[in-house]
Length: 209
Image (cartoon, rainbow, N blue to C red; front, side, top):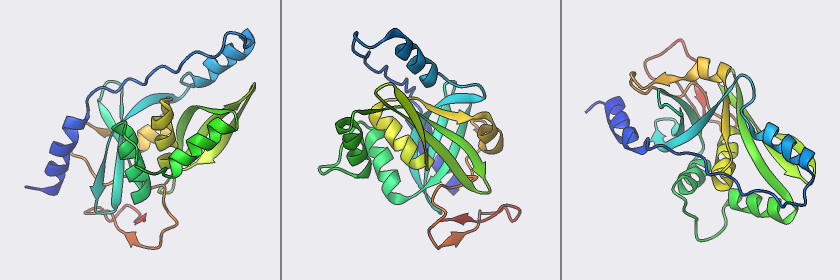
């Protein structure tokens, strides 16, 4: 059976609808304007679409996490590292490793320091590298941090917050459900030394693993 068809057969059962769980309301003594600001910050910004994790699969380039839109009309494949793939897979299935993994540790630090993850973005594809952002609240302050999408997605799953993907990323990388899945258009682990070209597509740049 061709590899692409096998991947598609394995992926389709994982596409059960995944509505992001609503976060618990903040304490009633918080000022109303701050609540309004939080609602505005966690809403989908202009030019972004909320997406959900369909699953993680091994690929010839390492691992790929697939995001899908609410209608499941298209997917966004993102090449990721092995440890991030393991963390995303566990969190997607609502399971935990017996000892804290890196993203578990980050979650714990955020809580102990009074912080709260609000949402994450996949903002752009620069060359063949995806770029993301996480939004964190501490008290009445909301700040952003540059992040690899794999880390952002893992944190979003663990904290049950929205994942938003920019329309320009969708335009560059989306795969229709009517098509066979292909190699991801990019990765967020460009620092690893090995380089493997996309299969059967000499026009594309190689993915840095």
